[in-house]
Amino acid sequence: MALYDPKSPCADEFINHQEIVDTLAYAEAHKDDLDLCRRILAKAHPNVAPKEEHCTCITHREAAVLLMCDDPGINAEIKQLARQIKLAYYGNRIVLFAPLYLSNYCVNGCLYCPYHAKNRTIPRRKLTQDEIRAEVIALQDMGHKRLAIEAGEDPKNSPIEYILESMKTIYSIKHKNGAIRRVNVNIAATTVDEYRMLKEAEIGTYILFQETYHKENYLELHPTGPKHDYCWHTEAHDRAMEAGIDDVGLGVLFGLDNYAYELVGLLMHAEHLEARFGVGPHTISVPRVKPADDIDPTDFDNSLTDELFEKIIALIRVAVPYTGMIISTRESQAVREKALQYGISQISGGSRTSVGGYVDEERPHDTEQFDVSDQRTLDEVINWLMENGHIPSFCTACYRAGRTGDRFMDFCKSGEILNYCHPNALMTLAEYLTDYATPATAERGWRMIADEVTKIPDARRREICAANIEAIRSGDARDFRF
Image 1 (tube, rainbow, N blue to C red):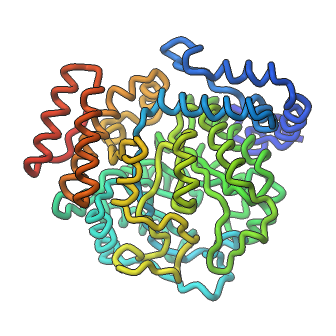
Image 2 (image 1 turned 60 degrees about the horizontal axis):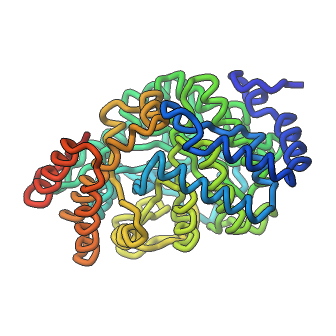
């Protein structure tokens, strides 16, 4: 039997089944110990630890105790602490991005995804480089600066060479004042050599969802194809980091398996990356199973309520305070509004999950990977964010200035990242307001910028930021950053 070892390169050891079982048993036994729960919360409070550490991450076992506790007072404290931690690390900024689906050809048999190889009802499509150019121009005309490219696993139709060529195409397009400044990549687990190719192509974050950490159920949910290999898939982030990719993103598909098991596995994965590489996950995503072609979420009996989903988001923020947390348009406006209060720092906007969906005026549904619940335009999302006190940000400065991996974590954990991100967010918002916003959004946005500039603590930086914003508003000057 494998033994638990967070530093091990072996998936069965760093995501150890017996450790998860023991953790859940411990949490069940201690869930009513309110003094213990409060000590755990106090440990994670941003005002407890020395400034250079900012706050202490709680362990997966401590998080499980809080998850199991159903005391209303403790649950309220968890959410309040999550809000405090999010503001301490990321301020009131929300980073925006869009997914770009390149191909839905796939050789895997995943039971929860409409792209699975046996699905004969979904049209298969792969974008040409000319079609990618048209998609990127459409995304730039919305105002997007950051993309997450997606493709099914198919060595024939979407090999690594196709992904690399597509990245080169995306980065090359400069349309009017538009430019994609960061390309994150969500593709199947691959080799160290191919991860090195992605690094050389200037990948942003390498994103790969685990789907489920329960190995036995993972094998049942992935009956055929390369993704059936649990260890190969689970160890992919290690290979990416060995290849020099600084920023990696984790996620599970909540609803496939028991939510408590999944949360503990997810936090153990974050702890493993910290233990082995000294750098935890750059992002953690929290998708839930949604309807799609050939997929009915009721086939999976592990759905969780919105209230429980909010608590899980808050606990991830408390347990992994430095990570960027992502929620997509899988979720409704109402769910996303709550999630933003409890730790989410990145959202998609104006998203289409079909292959080639952005050039069409009408939203296509025949090649969607999942139903989009929040179907508002990017401009509507930006206006809504500002109405709720959030600064919409298109910033990619840290990535382009080399503040990635351990350099980003050092800045983030010490709180220094706020000295860069706040003015950078305002300058990228100024670009959006000048180039793309509707009059109503622009009016609200300029009021927000005028107010937020005054909050930049360093006088010299405040002066430079204000001058740059004026240059953006009055001319074609773009891409200022600290």
